[in-house]
Length: 179
Image (cartoon, rainbow, N blue to C red):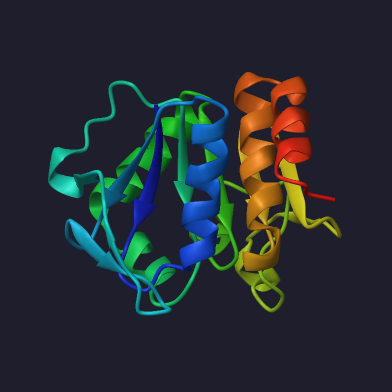
């Protein structure tokens, strides 16, 4: 199962484009409402999460996704359950995926040391020890990071590629007419 953590102030497209790509690939995905079952995006869009943070259990995690946005990223970072999920996923070599401002959460934890990573321009200094990439989306080991909303579909397809293979990601890309 892939869990996409949603906290008030999350970037809408960074979360929902990923969910869309994963579901097209027939990957089990669940949104987790960190700040409540109904979560309000930074664009004031109310999204009903599949489960609340109180119902999250780590047992079946294949990957976790941290959308960016503000104050969504800050709300994710200050949540103990999210922090624990990041730590456990990383220690078990599960995919830890973050886009826009959210890679800063991984940087603050020291998880990017020596890894190629990227974030929204201006957040590079928050990626403690990372080798800053010039790519829009980058995978280094179990860490997948991306710059921002404009590459949300590409970010989702990169997660698909890493979970179920390039052929599936390429088929989806072609189907949705993504250049």
